[in-house]
Image (cartoon, rainbow, N blue to C red; front, side, top):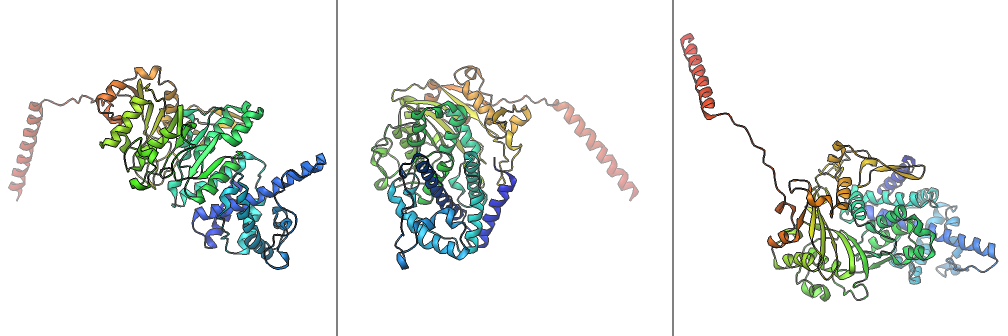
Length: 524
């Protein structure tokens, strides 16, 4: 966790950016990302130099070449001058000139390396407006404890949370406790290959990585498993270059060395090379309107003929998953009960041709203040041979936060999310919630009941918050997947007084009123 002191330092830099005229939180994070990357490059070369000194062998990979960059007078500036360890001690004017005129062109040319993160530096632009602000930001970043993976990861997450709190671009950010729930329910394993085809800031991929660190620590003792984790496990696509830069830095800071975070318009480009490749898909894709048939990938249209992006994404998830692969994805409610031919076709496909495992209806305020749309988490397994027996439903009514635009926490931070608890001496200690606390945060109950979906949950009545519905019942409703279609409401019997008793009381009241009026008339 990051300390209050560190948090206030970040807030101070944030405010300095705003005062300096950079009001877009995405741009602030992007500029900080570049500087973090610069520091990381220098530290990587320092490690390589130390190793070379110890072993007496040449440096394996020299990031900063010898000589000058050839930009400007006198052959330019020495690459050595661009290193973080040198820059941070420069005066403000020199630092600003070197970063603007030499470091950023160097970052852009590094993009040709094809290594993690450098690929997304092609469009890197330096927009910090003044030397004074640059010095302030460099000073903050230099003091950050970058050797501690948890701290630098939490630090970047804190900055990303400002995207949402600033009221702009909140659509890029799925609430972290909802991501944690979806990861908990799908339980990634060391052998998984995880994909988010609309990755944004890579929140799902980061959470999957953290889950593995917490639940499978022994995988990092094996070289093969470690290489798989760093180079082959995580895949994210996006068509926004800013998101790719921020997302890949988020992964790097969380200790994933070379993730596959790449530019791809998931609905428009064909999927050769990615088809049947992934064992786990986690996603909350943008559901915005419709596409033209001409601009939609033909291999998706072959699964479902539609212009609706939410249905095309469902087709995409099935395309990307390998047989036996599983998915947890957020969908708008319309996917569950839409009446068009395409809506019904995709639901029938999930139930009949694959295995639909569960639906978690989310409260409509989960994505406020950016969207009040009702959504659900859909969990399914690609089988190509059916397998749906029962579908598990859960009606989530509280996620630990108020459901208005403020989204205020209803419980302390350690009691929010699917696994309430805190760390003590490096070990996680679970905190069981009271019934009153569970009523404010349903997420631990969702995770616990999901684990029992093939056992005790089968016996729950449809009046309960969670229950199972046999496949035959779903088919009989035309594959309607809205929980309200199956949920039974208990009507409590109301006791009413006999009509004669009520009429007698009314007559008595009328008599009293009449007598009162007579007395009033006599007095007048």
